[in-house]
Image (cartoon, rainbow, N blue to C red; front, side):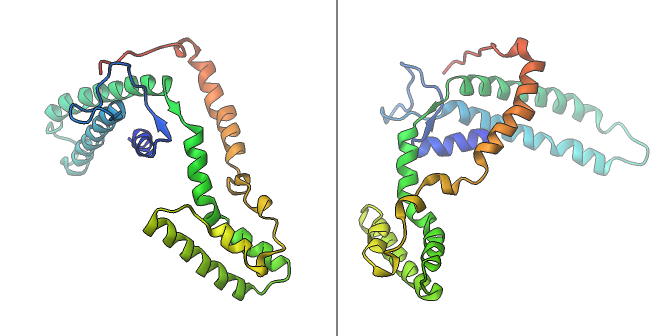
Length: 220
């Protein structure tokens, strides 16, 4: 559910897309649409599975003493339905991940638009390290950032926070190019990805190597 929800949200931002066939219709009314129908289908099935989980929980909570047979009919519905739904979800995910499209330039543009705000703490620390008064600098950054945000929200203009800061003598000693390097704000993400691939993904790929080339065709 979360995987497909995240893909749908990122598709709305045009950062990522699930596979889309050449003749696929996204909307019968709005021809431009490329709705993430695969992920919508998987999300819908996931909700079903989540709801089915409550049934055995209720049985475990309410069944009398050593056990009665009030779980029998319930099981015959819940267990096969859950397995069939999960199988469908996994088939959809194989199809989606096999043809996932990422748009790095859209992502870069969004990062560039938000980075000045994200960098304000580092800018503050760099300015203090250069000899500035922390409280005074904090107030300047607060005012400049709110003014820049207003330009973006009210008038749809580009984020001009960095230009505002550069024009203030209090920030003249800061190396903005270094402070605005996006790599300063990703923490251990690259290492965590490498560790996850090494410790989790690679062993699973070895174990199920015969299944790695499986492809799933969906009717859309």
